[in-house]
Length: 467
Image 1 (tube, rainbow, N blue to C red):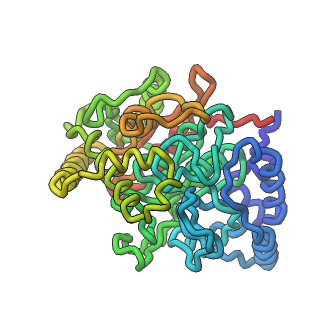
Image 2 (cartoon, rainbow, N blue to C red):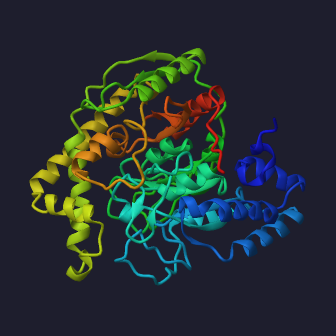
C-alpha cells in the first residue's frame, strides 16, 4: 500500500516539497492547491483557522517563478506555513482569540513571521488560539471550539490548538506556535505531531504578550527534521527583542542524524512535585528510554532535586492574567472567557513579595537544572498527564487544572528557559497518540533535536485518517 505522505503534496514534509520543487516534479502552486483542497474538505469539522490568507495563491505563483528561474528566495521558498493568531502578521489583525481585541490589521510582522517570509514560506493563514493563550483546552470566545483530527470529540490542546490540529490534519507541513507553559508541546502531544519549544531568546519575540517572561515561539511540524528546518528560519536576531540571542545563521538540521551514542540521559520521574501521568504516558517514557539505550545512550533516573514549582508557575500564570485584565477597560472585561476572569480575581491580591519569591524559585530551578546538565545531556519525561479532554467540556477549576490536567510536565522548562521537544511515540490503548518530552541545557537545542530524531526513526509517527 502506497504511503500517502509520499504522493499527496498536502501530506509531504517540507523537505520533500523542497526536493520536488528543485527537481521540477512539483510546483509551489500545485502543493498549495492540494493543501487548500484538503482544508476545504476537513477544516469545517476541525476549525483550525482564524483567518485564511487571500494572497497565498499569488505568493505560491511568485515562488514557482523563482524556482523555474533557479533562484529560490530562501530555505522555505514555496512551503505552505501557518502563523498562530497570537503572533503579528502584517496585513492581518492579531485577535488573540478575543472579542476584546481590535479587528484592524497590524502593519508590522513579528520577528518569527518575518523570518518565515524572508525564507520564502507561503503563509496559508492564521490559526486559532485560546484567548490570549491562557489555557490548554482548545476553544476561545471569538472563534469557538477547535477539534482534534484523531477524534473530533476531543480537544487538540492549546493554546496552539489550531496549529497542532492543522499539522496533524495535513494542512501544510509547517506551523508556528507559541509556548508559555506547554502551549506548543501539549497540543503537539495530543495531536501526534512534533512540537519544539526553543531556548528562551532563540526565536525573537515582539511585541511581548502577557506571558513574555516565560514564552517562546517555535515550530509545530510532522517531522523532527522539518522542525529543525523551520527553526533555522525563525532563529535570527531581531533588535526589537532585547533578549534575542546573537545571530547564528545555521541550518539546525546539521548534525541531527548523529544519534545519541555516548550521551547521558536521565529519566525525570518528579519535576519537583508528584506530577500525574497515566499508564500510557509511563509506557511511552519507558519505551523511549529503551529506544535511546539501544541507540547507545546511557540511561539513568537521577533526581535533580528540584523545588516544588507547581505553585510558583501558577503564580506566574495567574499574575499575568490578573495584569491583563486590570489593564483592560471595565466594559470589555465581560467579553472575556469566564476562566480568565476567575483566575485574575484569584490572583488580584498577589503581593510584590510573593512575585519576587516566585522569581527566586524560577532561578533556583534553572540553576539546579544547569548543574544537572553538567552530568546529563538530555532529560526524558512525559509531555502530558493523560489523553486529551473532551472538546465540548467546560473549563472548570482552572487553577487546579493547570498543574493537574494541563501542564505538570511542561511548565518546568518554561521557568528554566531550556529547550524542550514533544515527540510522538505511537498510539496508546485508546487509539490516541502517545508522546514523550526531551529537554537539554539552555542553548543546546541541537541535542533535543538529535534525541527526537532517534525516536522518530525508531517509532513511526501516527497518521490521521480523515473521512
